[in-house]
Length: 392
Image (cartoon, rainbow, N blue to C red):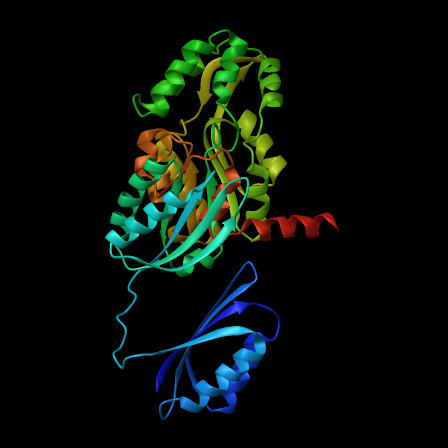
């Protein structure tokens, strides 16, 4: 006998125990068990094996199910061995809202790639909906390509990550700063103090889109700040605001024992404050040269460009004794591309098109803590941890 037992009905404590008591009484062997509860409705599946046709155990299960006010169905399984599942992926789907036609499109794309949805888990219902789909089969590159097109069609975000041990392991998360961890570009805020905001903003936009060499563009922009008093820099430091969700992201990662760092083409005048405020583990940024209380229009030492960002990610991982597979990088501009490519998971956050196309995952939501969903962390657990801390 090889039998699939499927139980549905209103869930309550004791239902599963009562049904398994019947199986124990009849000496049934359990080959597999899956159970899910959706809004107090139970779906329980059990694969049974044993001698004979299973008539006795079926009759007993039907009687017990009647007592429990649940429905039970039986499916006789063939003797053939099911095909191996192959590579598994976590496909995270996010939207505000997430409409049925979007879900249908995602499921259709997965099927066309030869992938099957094994499980769906809700990660968040507000301020955006987020679901984790555990998918078996399919090629990683093709899944990302096909689902990226679906994301554009429905104005949602979709991320694909192989299901490996590293998803459950301690990780290093390294973020860009300007327009990622904090809102806006600090150099443009400094330029506003120096009266050259429009010119600097134009060059910044070209550099972030990959149209200009980053180092050359940074030196040109910093040169325009020559003569700016340190007091103006201090005023800008006070104006810097974290991206919504940034505190929640960092706090949650730290609770989980993750290491968190920042690498910036910006300036230590701002990043030093962020390290102290958020308790970050690692930091790298450019240092503005100051003489007699004013900026000289130069930076001290080598510029932190896209290659240096990737090097810093590797250095931080080495200091934490973590493999590169255990690293996550988050950024928005072309100078983040090397870092995103080097990381085990590269995430484009409200990024330029060239960055979105190259990253493993892309987020277009305004909340930085949406990154947690890509790591499989449900909002309910985050809120429960925050509530527990508040009671201390």
